[in-house]
Amino acid sequence: MRLLNADLHCHSIVSDGWLDPADVVRRAKANGVELLALTDHDELGGLAAAAATAAKLDLRFVSGVEISVSFFRETIHIVGLGIDPAERTIVDGLRQLRAGRGARAQRIADALAEVGIQGALEGAHSFARNPALVSRAHFARHLVASGVMPDVKTVFDHYLARGKPGFVDHEWVSLEDAVGWITGAGGVAVLAHPARYRVSMADMACLLDRFVAAGGEGIEVVSGAHSEDEMRRFATVARQRGLLASRASDFHGERESPVDLGRCSPLPPDLTPVWSRLI
Ligand code: AMP
Ligand code: MN
Ligand code: MN
Ligand code: MN
Image (cartoon, rainbow, N blue to C red; front, side, top):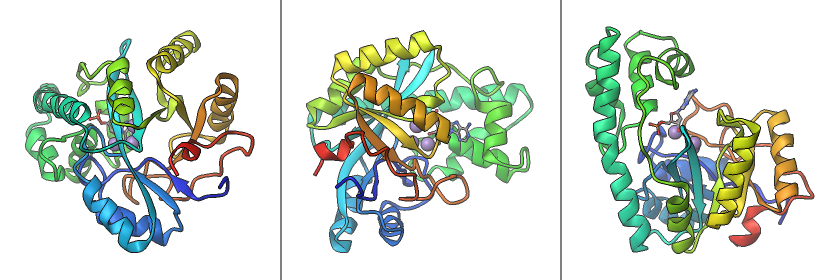
């Protein structure tokens, strides 16, 4: 089971991925993935189509989600794996969470207009296939397409990251609510790409304390967003805290993602994989 090619975090057009849910599953199968979770941001809308395609292709599939959380002044992402996508509390909670994105997108567009970039809201919407889920990635794609910046990463560095002119503060859900929705829906809560948060060591320890106290059980040790050093650092965290380890490409599309579906490094062999709880 340890050598299973599991990929437990990726995106479709239901949030800010480039592929239809069914095409995500087909690509995962073609890449040799043996256990897949689709984890769109704050959305469950792609899970039925993905599960149906996975069943046809004989690929093991678990329902997932990546929930946006406000913690101190940072945005943190909590992945839920093995959730029941029909469970009322998570469905209603995510609907409310998504509802905040419309006004946020308007504020991002207003902030960009202040620095001379007009029409960004319409531009972002032209890239967002789900109008309820406009993400900064859609703004970034629009700025690339309109020639403002050469690539998505450069857009984030210049305009969309915290402290840059197009960044706006936003209140997402609390860590406790996000973990509670996931466990209440029968799922396992996993801290996504922990190396990506700009928090001090003390705040990371506090985040982990609160995550575990809320019922969180897993951490992405291997992530498409982690370097080898970061992977080793969070393998140590998983060992010290007895957390289940996840392996996750965070694939959005071949143009944007450094790691393709199923092509992540293996987990360090002494860690307990999160999929021991899922299959
Ligand atoms: P949002 O949920 O609207 O804040 O958008 C977050 C999404 O933007 C992430 O899930 C990534 O897809 C993308 N993103 C965030 N930071 C970066 C970055 N530095 N480079 C490329 N994409 C990024
Ligand atoms: Mn994303
Ligand atoms: Mn994320
Ligand atoms: Mn993600």
